[in-house]
Length: 117
Image (cartoon, rainbow, N blue to C red; front, side, top):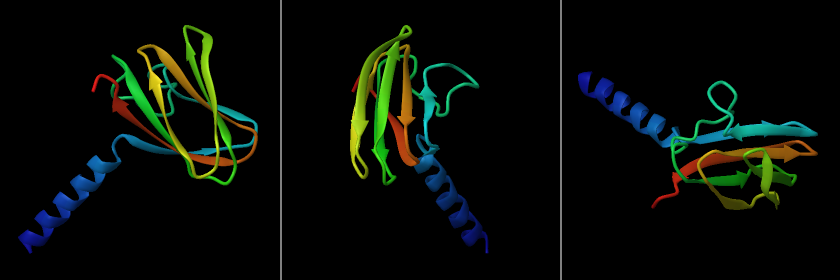
């Protein structure tokens, strides 16, 4: 019995670790969602590499396209449309804000990677 409890605990912790830096978002029509960059309590996802450069890996899990917007010091730095079923990597420098903008319903997965590697 102890072996099963230990096995369950290990499986649960591995699953939790695997999901740690991935977040799935439901986008509503005509919505702009701040994903990261505003700060504690205002970000939809936590970028574990916010103290340096990072890479956001974004996958469109929905049926409609949406836009990715990156702002730096209040100015739009980059915009990109992401078609349904596609994925992209967006480099983020320290202090950038990442937004997902959608005219139709959508679903996105966002994860972060260290930009220094």
